[in-house]
Amino acid sequence: MDRNLNKAAVCYGLYKENKIIGFLGVLHQPHPINKKIKRVTRLVILPDYQGIGLGKMFLNAIAEIYKNEGFDFSIKTSAKNLIFALKKDENWVLKSFDYSKDKCRDYNGIKKTYRKNCKAASFMYKKGR
Image (cartoon, rainbow, N blue to C red; front, side, top):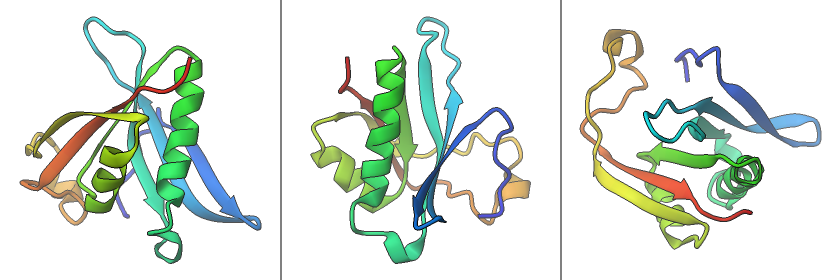
């Protein structure tokens, strides 16, 4: 991916034998009522390690950390396999399922990686505490 990551993101790596195989970025989500929401800004698993559950395992581990610190934790994704996996996972609650909107102000700068008008699902992590 060639899109820049927000400088405020807290970044986590998933490693196998000192080689990074996964990446997850987390941002604070501004909300007028709930001041304790974190959201995934990026989740990447290298192609050789996709399809074996590492992404969901990694996501659950990071979500559990934030939940135990008193935060709500969410993700919005258009990745079909991740949507399917999270819908089956009792730790996640589907909050919405709709077509993504073109709300990006800098669409021209990210059009190689930005997917508009595709189905996207929002989930909230519910396990913890």
